[in-house]
Structures are given as structure tokens and as C-alpha cells.
Image (cartoon, rainbow, N blue to C red; front, side, top):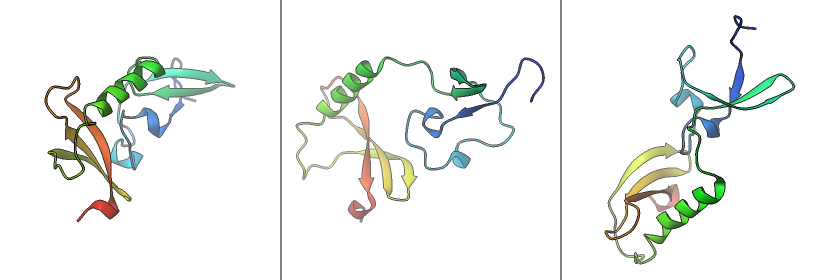
Length: 117
């Protein structure tokens, strides 16, 4: 147990950053100070999050659909500009600029390693 007024809890890997994380070691170090929110308490165990309180799941799903809708008119042979945001054992996550005129400016997608030349 820590000093009075402190406690330990688990921050699941999905609650560290709002995008896929391959390794916690690439995001955090022992002794690093972070801000967390308590998601739940169960039998003396805390579940924590480093993510801000977000919109309810239906709102997040609607936002995701809107991001994908911006790309509906893109033809398979068309090339878009993007920035690699994360490297994974099975590919790369790429932030892609959306075509002009949509309600979103970008979206993140997976490029499987079999699709990388």
C-alpha cells in the first residue's frame, strides 16, 4: 500500500491513448507521473483511464462513420497522402488526409504488411 490518500490501479492498454498501442513500454516508463480517471472500483481494485471522458459510444460510432463516409468516393487506384502514426508487427497505422469537402480532415487506417512494398 502507498501513503494515505493514494492507491494503485490498473490502466488497461486500451485506456492509455486513443489509438492502437503495440507496447506499453513504448508509451510509459516506471516512475513517470500521469493523470488518470477512476473508471470503476471492484473488490478493492481500481480500473483507471488516461483518456479524457468521451462522448457516449453511439456518438463515437457516428463520428467514425462520418470519417469513413468522407472516403466513399475514393477509387481503389487513387493515391492519398498520409503519415505513419504507428508501426505494428502486422503493418502500419496511417493517418490519411480526407478528400476536400467532407466533414472530417483525416482518418486513421491500417495498412497490412502484405500491402507494403
